[in-house]
Length: 147
Ligand code: ZN
Image (cartoon, rainbow, N blue to C red):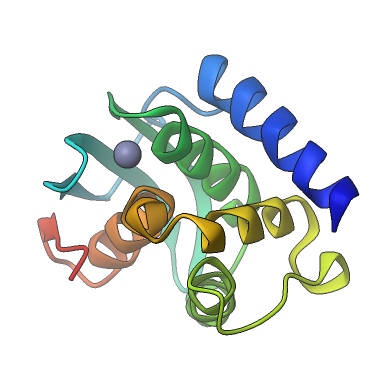
């Protein structure tokens, strides 16, 4: 767990400062806005979806390092995934950041570092905002709620 904690700092710093996919994809066909009033994080996620597959996804917005790093790693992970893969991963990710389940790198890959968020319940909504927003976009909703 100490390794994961170090990696947590590293990933949050790296992706928080230099977010990946911090631009909207060409020819996006779904989008949603997400807002986390607890922290003030706000972002827009746009994706290009064909059939059941997210071909491309990106985001823009302003938020704390955790929300930015979470959006960055989420968009990296979600490319090429199906809606059901995304639903499953979000469910797993949510149980890990809320401390209901231990982070398993085999299951989560880089996303496992967000297990560190479980120690800071105030930051759970920062970590899940981008995921909620992608889910909202895929469901055809314009706005995501972190409730
Ligand atoms: Zn935040």
